[in-house]
Amino acid sequence: MTTVELSGVLAALRERYRSVLAAYRRAATGDPAALRAAGSGHATRADRLGHLAETVRETALADDWTGPAADAYRQAGGAWSGRLGDTATLLRAQRDVLYGAADALTDAAAGIDRLGAGFERDFAALIARCGAVPAGQCAAVLAAARSLGETYLSAAGSVTSALRSHLAGLTGRRTMPAGPRHDSGAVVHRTVSASAATYQ
Image 1: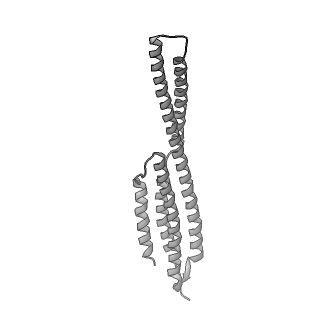
Image 2 (image 1 turned 90 degrees about the vertical axis):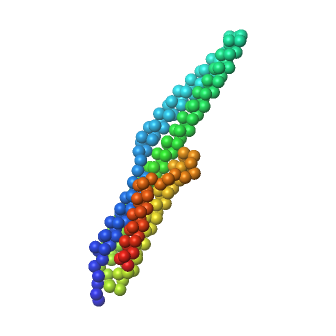
Image 3 (image 1 turned 60 degrees about the horizontal axis):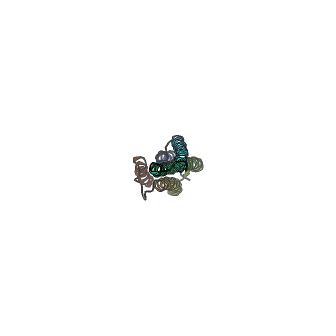
């Protein structure tokens, strides 16, 4: 029975799929620690403004001062207290956005890392099992390799798409343009698919 050595071809396919997974991983790259630090800073400033707003409000409501000047002071104090409170609320909302973005980036990166580990495990097993196969089984083995790679690329693409949607939701926008890193990953994905087809 004639056998064909496919280890080299399968290894080449694996490298191409790896490059796409790496592109999707870069699309989920950020600095969650810096985002959380910024969010914490917003929270601290919001607390300070909230305390200041309460102090201004309590001072403005003091009833040991009467007359037109007191009335004007109370009116102005109430207005400033409201502005300070509104700013504190805005800062807390921005804190939540930053924390949410940090969590989303962390989850997406971890998800793609898990997919990458699974891809390496499954593709290595495929190469070990099908490095040399009967000539009549070559097409089936290459199809299986391509299906395996495409499955992981699709899953990684779903993770990055979910990340973009989540970040868009946090910022109140319906859509966010895919950055150049994600676009390059999609291009490589199409290139890998076309290249893999040439082995069949």
